[in-house]
Length: 194
Ligand code: GRF
Image (tube, protein in one colour):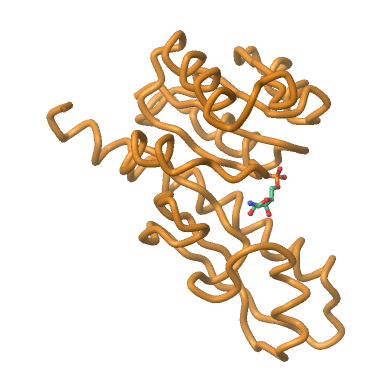
């Protein structure tokens, strides 16, 4: 199962996926890392691990459809079968999402459906939540709304701020994203392609 990871930033989840996929029994191969920003830190990490990378600049395109057509072409060139969003910070259009439905997953730093969108850690702290966490889910056109594949919970501890809570959640993100990718890749491999 050939996988592309879409990133916009530092790429710590991307790194966790690449490293997990090196295990011989892992059911997916990271075949491409694609970023909408040429300065994304994750691109250098991916290149250092020998993964093909590409940066596609939305600003040189005439609109979202045009930009996403370029992404689609790059996925096609690399014969990608499954897409992982990992800190990819642009909203994807419904036509693109629908084409990849069931074959595109995302990690979100909250226990969805709680805290969709940004600043999840700050909002959990402001609510006085006693637990928080992260979710790997299928991507649907509505933001952060697709069916969950795996979740991990962490406690919110006295004295936590957004940075300490984010770090506790991120450590669990790095555990569940590779496990969720393996689950999805195995389930897709067992299904006749359409
Ligand atoms: C992670 O917290 C992820 O849950 C969210 O964006 C952040 C990306 O971090 N979608 P990284 O680039 O994987 O380090």
